[in-house]
Length: 162
Image (cartoon, rainbow, N blue to C red; front, side, top):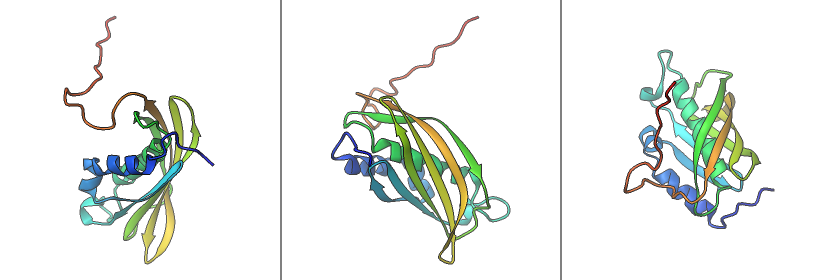
């Protein structure tokens, strides 16, 4: 069993999710947080669909990314933040149903990099069917608060010269 370095990890994860304006816009909820994992759900609305009426792939990807991200965030120190480095999403069936349910789990937590997997299920009439799987890599950012900086972003992009 994974042991989070911050004993107050659940409250920190829930507070961070509460600041996620995109998840609020979509209508997602953080249903469970546990060491190395979390569950997120999202009710269906026509505004979240593609032309066939299924959940849009971008919406499925956003849920998968957040499931992996918040699973990884359970393994962050109290003074750290986290950012997604990359994720690979495989949509294995249409996201057809009344809601999406995502489950994220840490595969391996290192000092700076955390690898997570997410499974996204479409729920129709109470029956869950797998619609996507994702593998994500996240970077732990020690000493960086998990919230907006009053001075703006702390990172800058340098132009490359040839």
